[in-house]
Image (cartoon, rainbow, N blue to C red):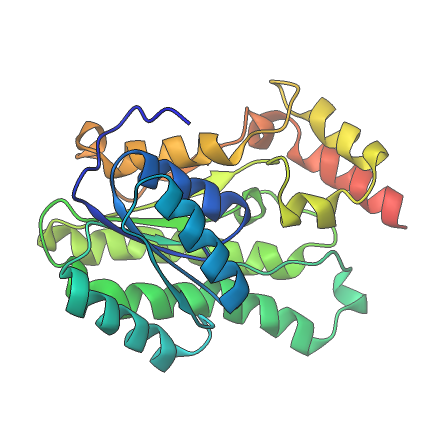
Length: 267
């Protein structure tokens, strides 16, 4: 993996950074010289991710926690700060998803996704603020096209991610005077991720998604990582409050068509 940015000596904390898109982001920052910390619910995944990041030259650390637990998030960040001082980059990427029609979904199922995606994002950002209070600090929330493209069987994610994007915009206003930039990345269909395995459980549905992307392919986790590094770099030092789709044009041309195809497959 070739790094096109230099984050040597920078401190990056990625929540949800032990698998899929978020691990890809972590690997990009590690390859660019950053000291990377990751957190997720599974200690096994945390340990594996830390080993991967160390193999890329990062002084990596990891924490097993649930972002729905505000106290646990605070403890992890305080522990990390005791060793690594302030943060340069914070990525909030923990997420939950499962395909279900609203009339078939339990209130607990809806609440679970909102609690992980939206409440969890607030927990992470609120807890990290004391360690980000300096000019140049970058916050990136990982959103989704469901935030602005309504999709069947995704009412819970649509609601939660729309909230994440509005939280991004609001905090860019509140935290801008401290020199903190707050942005979101909205990944399109990304290969080899749990999200795509759930949304496209067979090759037929996967092909529908690929055909709906103007670039005619799935994206990669590394491509999301490159976008995250750009937003956290000096090249984007006047960029804040932005929701950046990194989706091969999918949200422009094909997201609704792909979602309808998915709904028909599950019907």
